Amino acid sequence: EAGVTQFPSHSVIEKGQTVTLRCDPISGHDNLYWYRRVMGKEIKFLLHFVKESKQDESGMPNNRFLAERTGGTYSTLKVQPAELEDSGVYFCASSQGVSQRGHGYTFGSGTRLTVV
Amino acid sequence: GDSVTQMEGPVTLSEEAFLTINCTYTATGYPSLFWYVQYPGEGLQLLLKATKADDKGSNKGFEATYRKETTSFHLEKGSVQVSDSAVYFCALNSGGSNYKLTFGKGTLLTVNP
Image 1 (cartoon, rainbow over the protein chains, first blue to last red):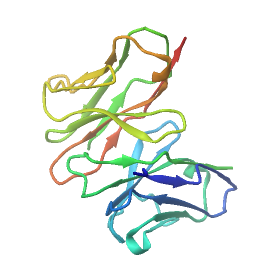
Image 2 (image 1 turned 90 degrees about the vertical axis):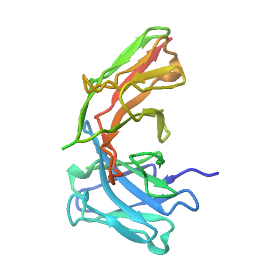
Image 3 (image 1 turned 120 degrees about the vertical axis):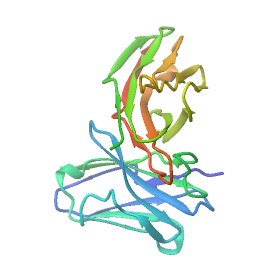
Image 4 (image 1 turned 180 degrees about the vertical axis):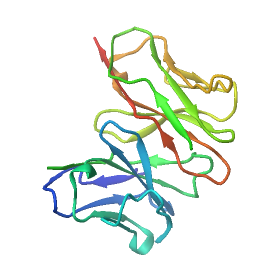
């Protein structure tokens, strides 16, 4: 069974540009989550999809970030325009049902975003 | 709110040394506690977990005991190997209908031969 796949693995862009990160969850996993680790800080929750619907986007830092999951399969996270403070590692995770008490997550390897 | 504090790294050890990575937490309710590990070039992987006080999670020679009285979940291994070199994250979920994980900042461990 393929795991959670994220690409690109690394992205270096200039401030003001647009970047789109992609996450392919495990096949059949309806729940998809994005987390982010800004350098030197904690990994923090960004948002949660159930199929194509956003259930919780309380962790999204501002309106420069747009997440989509058309068709309930893969998800994209677009940053437009990118700022220096957006640099970090963006993790995607999926679970078959909604994670109960934090269990059941499968994480991807992350996308390292560097904004220069 | 919920928070996790883990010891700052980096930690550098020689092979076969004893490892402790401290983790303390603040949470409402009765949290589940986790250690995740990220090996170079790989995703976050669940290493071990504990769901109630005095539970001991263990995997791959690593252990951590859920200590409610000290709100701690320290990670230990008696004899580390070069292959244990990775970033280790302590995390919690505060339960109820909450599915989110709250992570610490991570500790980079390097084991030298």
